[in-house]
Length: 288
Image (cartoon, rainbow, N blue to C red; front, side, top):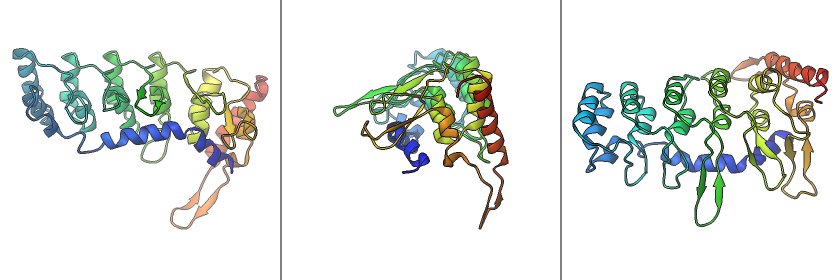
């Protein structure tokens, strides 16, 4: 098993949980018609039409439950405004007191803030930035329990670093936005099999987010455990633990240029440059 395959295995739980979320983060889970025959149906139609004037009128003259959830998918109008890109409605709902931290979904394993991060397009920060202005919990950890097991998702920061724009560029500015608003760069999810706490460093390695990794390691001087990544099978006796330097020096991070039959020449020089900057910093600072 190579390093990349092993790293992917280490976050299987995280990916599995988000795959559970994905069924609710697609239609029909975000149809405004899900609010038919509820007390907020008129409001739902106004949000659907992105009609800020009508939203204001309805909220002013009616004692509406802004965070009412649809009965089937357990989503709120705030979340629907995010996924359906209804920006004026989104802002009016926030002004009216809609909760960016409301637990959503049948398993209560999402929030409007998590949804905004997961649905971020082209690294645009509109929804994330405005939710933060209205007290989105930047360090909220979602925990979902069912009759079989307890599943931990992640923190907003760990979700955000997996995003990229249409060209595959990392959403570094979103990471900085979260950190500048108090996101804990040491947040992590405990792995029972390895005994490690998987956080931003291991996630950056898994998702090849080297610019974000350089930001955490060099600019933010994040505390680095001796071992940051577990490689191998679940059996602790065969599992190998790697430091950041050992992982970056592995064959999976060579980043050699190559020519693709359809895409042409693929230049990996920027990745190599960033990797070497991190390795040089680790060596000079005695953190190897």
